[in-house]
Length: 251
Ligand code: 3PY
Ligand code: MG
Image 1 (tube, rainbow, N blue to C red):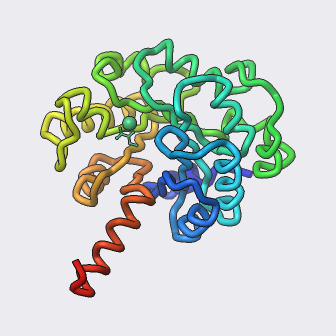
Image 2 (image 1 turned 180 degrees about the vertical axis):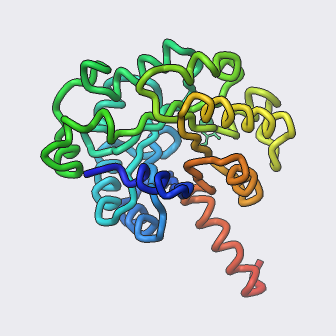
Image 3 (image 1 turned 60 degrees about the horizontal axis):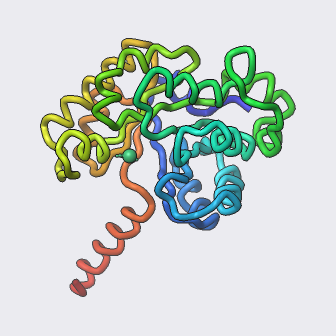
């Protein structure tokens, strides 16, 4: 199976990505049935375990949405496990240096490019018989840029061979640059986000980002962002329910 995100980009569109922080295969299935191009299972801040993540990935693959996973940290065993579960892309938080990025890419890629161990389990069921032969080209690797150190090492990180994209974490960028998560994001953070996008595209990488609100998402479209995550499942539930309560004059 090819990676549907590449087809989206070849059409000149940006991809819309859903973000799952709620550990439920049903809620994963509900969002995956909306016209999202990709759905990400968040094992960093999502409060659930591997078994639940597996069920969520199975639910996502009842649709054409591309299954992605954000791992809790840059550790080869974690990265390989979610790939074996059938993730077609890994988003790795807090990549600060070229060395960290190299270790990340090595965990995602089979030899000779990397050091991933063979045992693709559900990867084969999802990807098909030629999964392993094609994994190095189908599976996406996203390094999250969300610290001041990463901003200083941007070019070195972006030049790692086998990396697919930079994924921006505006909340942690705000924490690192401003000491708080301001809403809307400060001009300094917005400026750095623009710089990350330019460096990524300059290196032939894709740009992904989390968008806390629609206004920021519009700015990101203008910057040529390739993968946009606008709010997460919990935020959307809260927003829709709040809007309903207001409509009912209940609030
Ligand atoms: C951040 O904004 O820091 C994120 O990690 C978003 O997912
Ligand atoms: Mg973050």
